[in-house]
Image 1 (tube, rainbow, N blue to C red):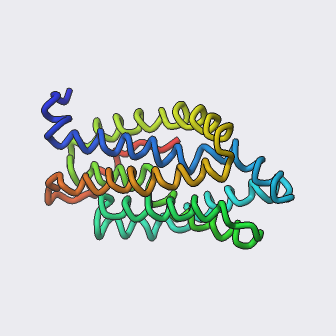
Image 2: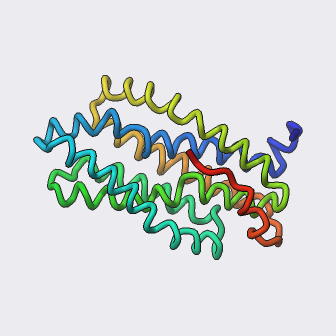
Length: 210
């Protein structure tokens, strides 16, 4: 088990930082659509199938760009890719408020799909692999468990925000969270020294994201 010193000043602080980052990223991008998309469809006069199709398009995009994102992670590290993904997510969440044309709406979801591929588990696992090397199994498992709290946090918070500021205000708040908090936390991981060992030895022990 990691000591308190490891969590505060040692390499395990990356698990803490990335754990919070994953909760925020999943909670801002992945989970809110089940609550926000019906409101978007109703306000803009679109069918539920079309409105939810934007979210499906984001998932498809994430799958298509994942190989490219993976190559960027191999070359530059997840600790560099994740801040960019967080900022793309912030831009996408802000733009969806103003995407009143159907084509613009779908284009924003494509952008959010790219952000999804660059902010969720894969780049975070790669970052931990670079930090911990062959000992990455436990940190990755811990991060996965932490990320599981995202829905527990996201849905109640989204409900409260929808009642208070509507879906537009909710997405603008989530955009600010990704821009000011998630990106900062991902950048903070850069301050942790990275070993020179190859990442390939730990890829086989990464758990599958659910």
